[in-house]
Every structure is written in C-alpha cells, then in structure tokens.
Length: 116
Image (cartoon, rainbow, N blue to C red):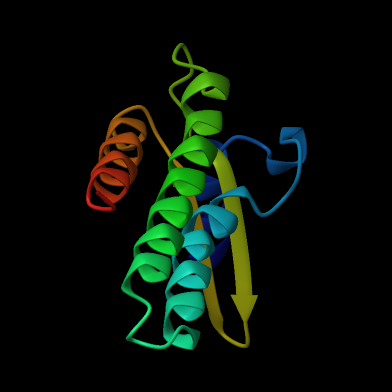
C-alpha cells in the first residue's frame, strides 16, 4: 500500500532537481517571519523605523514572489517548486499548482499592501 501511494504522489509532482535551488518555498515562507523577528527587536517608541522595516520586509517578499509567477510553467499540469521534508515518520511535501500560483501572488500582494 505504501509503495502505491508513493508512486502516485511522485507521478503528480515535477522532479525537484529541475529547480534553480532547493528551498524556494521555504524562503518565501521565512521572509515575513524574519521581518517579524526584526520588528520584535525594535523598541516600540521608534514607530517610523518599525513601519520602514515592515514595508521593506513586505516589499522584498512581494518581489521574491514575482520569481514564482514569472518562472511558473502555465502549460504544465504538475506541481512546481516542490519541496519534500522528512522528519522521523513525518513526510511533508509542498508545491505550487496552477490554481495556487494565483493565491501566492494575491496573498503576498496584500501582505505588501498592508505595509502602507
């Protein structure tokens, strides 16, 4: 049973070796988290600096998300930018398909727009 499941999952995903580097989605997830951690280090009385760091973080995340939009193969029916993580008995696989590419762009855009 496990072999059938692995074979089915692997047939849906694009080979991750074809990507430019291996942790693209992780970087997209971590950019806002790094910005939040930076914001926690800034004293609350420096409101202008907090706004600037928030705006720069969201702008960098938005620009980085454009990479996904411009390098996405819209003719493919398979997941792209696939990452797999294995921790003990837990196996997590993430990727972007044709529908979720619009959500990635929209979510990051609203994140950036919220910086104003």
